[in-house]
Image (tube, rainbow, N blue to C red; front, top):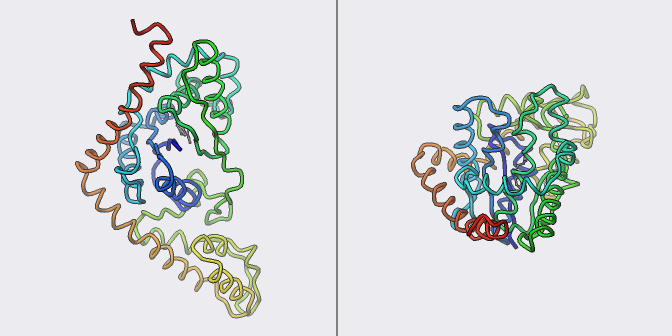
Length: 321
Ligand code: TRP
């Protein structure tokens, strides 16, 4: 099965990204045909600076390679390196009504926040549909917030097929309804915008600082503690198998546990877990030319799939004579 997903380059990865998205995507590459790209064109709709976009894109590539994206097994590229996707966006734009686009949550939310409603924000869902349809994607795993965008992509594909004859595969969404929310250091959902993240590719001292800042209640050492109410426990258990989790649970419930000690252990666990990935990431980051070469090869692979699809579309539309 061909699985496709895109990830916007948005800075440092944290445990929430890792456990909810990245680890899953990377696991797919062993069982499926994985297509994965860095959505830098989508990021233009919230443009900050040229340097930021360039750096974030490179960083995202290093992150993915370090965490195990294998460019031989998968097709991994930077969205803008397959410019056919912008051509397809234009063709698809005639298969969706403006009133439907106005209903997009992503668009409405941005406007509600007072963000300038640019054409790019408005077209965002069409570009995303093009990402998906250009590669004959069968399944698209995304977070809940992207559910509506996938419905748009399916509507657009159906409309095109209806108006111009069968052209696109209809992609199946894979919405993760029940991924456990990964709590941040303050107990709220871990998110860059809340400043409560643990960024596992950061300097050791920053990771230590974030872990030591995890909130805890004021239970004294000699009191039994409720693991299910503890943020430390819910982060720690991401790294533990059943047996180790039970052991930790018992330690919480037995008087004598110091939160500070558990945090130190959690810090070591995180460092041990990510040590091989951190090492690889440093290697990729120090070898920019190599990373660029891998990305270029990825874009060739992606283009090779996209070309026959865009030709199919052009011929349906009378663009190709
Ligand atoms: N919009 C998605 C997000 O912000 C990223 C994305 C762009 C994407 N194109 C895609 C995801 C195609 C899946 C398929 O998370």
